Length: 186
Image (cartoon, rainbow, N blue to C red; front, side, top):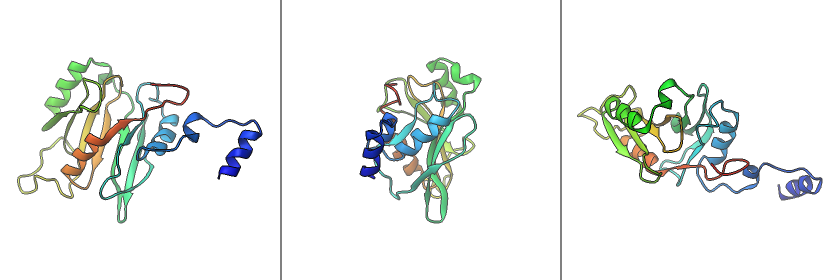
């Protein structure tokens, strides 16, 4: 691989900055590749995970109309977890306080995301904005979903886990914005 890259560079061909950098975030390369093709790329930075999950899935492209998505497959469980930058909706242009109120009212659970600049937050629960049942408050095996707003981004991100509520919360805590935009900073 090094010799091929060296040959290309010697021949005067250049690679995009993000192609030559080693990946340190989980799902980063796949997110960048999908983001680069998305309609919403000017308003919805690519995400990745700061650490590998348990269980650790294999990232792949996932379809998300107008946006981009990365799903992680496990043996016997396609799209076990993942994240997506959604296509822009009219509500996405509202101020942060309006977005916060919307997600707080829509979802049974809510949390701030302190790893990002304020205001960054998520509303979450079972798919359909439902609370976890009393018989399974950990959400084990249920489809958990979060709607995420990150300061400085226009889109509402989706983060999902079919593993458990704790896994979804782990994902929310480990989300990171891809640090470099191809061609410059965010």
